[in-house]
Length: 140
Image (cartoon, rainbow, N blue to C red; front, side, top):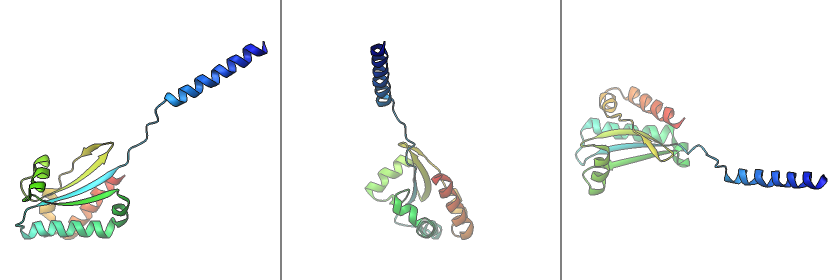
């Protein structure tokens, strides 16, 4: 009788160990936010304001996130061959601003171009606050 109990207990331990090894642990993927500012060589004052204010918000308010890799800033000149390839992927033909969330290899795009043109030059405080809020929302 003891032998049967011992064999049963040993079998149970072996099977539970095999189950634990075969069970896949799905970890929540790291979230990355990517701010992309597209422009050409010729830029109007509003385009320049979008770029400068975006860079200022990132440097001032998100330095720690940039350092950790949670936030990335890319300035893309669409008049270069490399920039043109990226612009084609995003269907960009002129100055644009995207704030995108990457998680588990999937991208969620947020086109903030219109918001940028409406506020970056004439309502700088609203532009900076809106950009900061969007980045914070996506980092969560």
